[in-house]
Length: 221
Image (cartoon, rainbow, N blue to C red; front, side, top):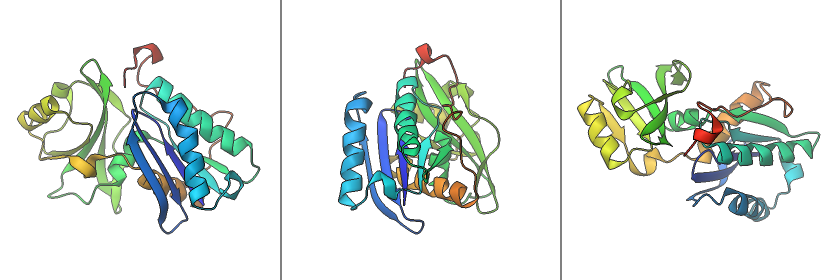
């Protein structure tokens, strides 16, 4: 069994995955109470599935971009679970890859832009191209404003407010994914983590670090 943990923003998501299906999943919006809410919810999910931390083959965790505090808490819990066991692997996955993994194939060669709100009118974003049956990053994540996003002839998914929706349409975005399809779900994080586990791409708890796009004190996710 693999546990997926995403605390990159105010949206927290957890999932259990057995290599074939999502056994359990929970997502909710927190008022920055990551520390208080994460471990009880995680314990309840494991208990509901009749599992203990020792039953986990791996723990996949969202690495960022995201908030300094949120990423630190999620990665800390993931490392703690892994270090407490000699058989559990740690698997870091970029946050925006989780949004991309939930999207279907392109229409007429469109690109994909996944984004998160980064505070003070800024966005953390990454672009993706369709390759070998999935969305692959075309570069690293970056910080931009609504007007600076490379969204012409692209599908956009992520945290889009009303002001952003208007800006994206004016910029020529082909589609803006909203509602449930724009939610960053740990079930997709779990699938990405499982694929890394099967390929033997395991991370070292001593060296795995969050992906920050700016100084922690400037983070407002």
